[in-house]
Amino acid sequence: MTDAQADFLRHAVSERKNILVAGGTSTGKTTLVNALLAEVAKTGDRVVLIEDTRELQCTAPNLIALRTREGVITGSAETGTGR
Image (cartoon, rainbow, N blue to C red; front, side, top):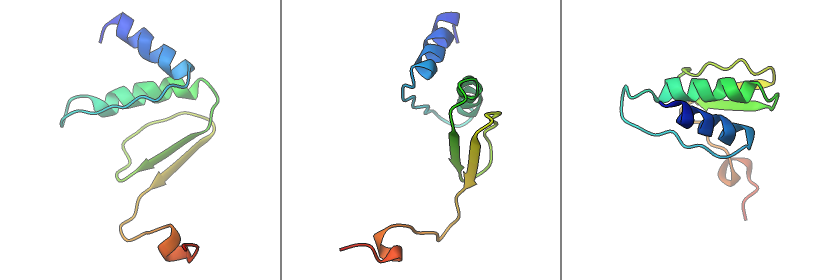
């Protein structure tokens, strides 16, 4: 990644822009997201991570890390709030 690309992403984080990270296996997605999370941690904003497998590292002081579980369904079908 060039310095200009890194600066662009830092600016996007500071401006609270949405960032999509996608790619094939072993292409550096987790490494990039961890670097972005390090920038987010500097803002003091709340960070909520939802992962199938715990891979992301975040030092944000206001972090909520959740893991998915098979068979957990939320919404109108389970809670009975649907119409």
